[in-house]
Length: 392
Image (cartoon, rainbow, N blue to C red; front, side, top):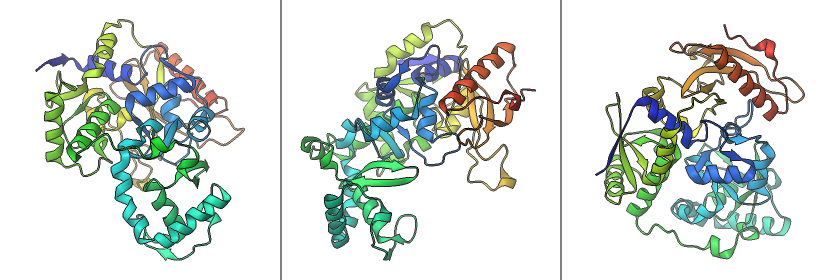
C-alpha cells in the first residue's frame, strides 16, 4: 500500500491548493464556481447574513471577481446547481440528484402520512406556480423537526426533502417552492441511485467528504455530518474498502499522530502543489463554515489555529466575537477579524482584529491583507473604511 509522507507545511500547502486559495486564482466566473463545487462535492449553506451568507463567503475567496448574482443564477435561473441536504443544508451539482435518493426516501413517510395536505399543496403549486408557506392557509399546528409549526410550512419542507418539490428561489430567507418536473428532465428525476447497497452509499459519501476537505482522517468529525446511518464501524469498513479499491491514499504528516487520507484522484494536484516554490502572497478570507474548516481539530493540528464559531454562544462566553472570520496568508492562518454587519450604501468596517500569537507580521503581509479586504469590500458592493483597521 502506498503511503505518502508530508511535512505540516506541505500538507497545508496542498490543502490551500486544493481549495483554490494558493497562488493565482484558479477559478473564475460561473464556470469556476461549477468547477470548484464539482471538485469538493458541495459547499455548506447557512442563512445568517452579516457580510454575506456562508456559500457566498466560500466562493468570494476562491472565484476571481465573484458576484453574488453568479450563484443565484446558477441555482435559480440556469438550474445547474441545487440547494438540498448533504453536509446539512448544502449546494451541489444538479447531476448529483440520483445519489440522494436515500435521503428523499427517508422523508417520504411523512408525505404518505399527510397525503391530504400534500395533495392540496401540489395542486396549488400546479395551478399557481412557485409558492412560499405564507401563500398557503393551512394554519393547523403540527410537530416538526424544529418544533411545532404551521402545516403549510411542514408540508412544503416535507415535500421538498422527499424530492416532490425543489426550491424555486429565495427572497432573503424566505423559500419559494415549485415542482421539479418543470425544470429537470424526467430521466434525471426518476434515475436510480447509483449506489445499490447501503455499504456502496457510505463508501461513496465518505470518499466525497474526503474530497470536500482535501485531507481527512478516520476519526469522529463534523465533516461526516449528513451521511445517512453512518456509525464508526461503518466508517471503518468504508475506509478499508476505499484503500483496497485504491480510491484513497494514506498520508502521514510529520507531528500528527493519526494518519490522514486523500483521494487518489487528487494525487496529481498534490504533486503540482509541492512543485510550486514561490511563496503565496495572496490573502483570503475564510467562511465560518468553509470546507477547509469542517474538521476544526484537524485545522488545529495542521495550522495551529483554534477556531470556534461563537454566534450561538452567550456574549459573556465568547473569546473573540459574534461573527469572526479567519484570514489566510501564504500557507498559514495569520489572523481573524470581526466585521460590522454590512448595510447597503455604507462602507465595509472592521470592528475588531486579532493577529495569531505565533505569526510574525510583516509589511508585505499587511499590504496583502489590505488588498484582500479591499476585494472583500468590492464583493459587498462597498468600499473599505481603512481607518477602521487596527493592525497594531
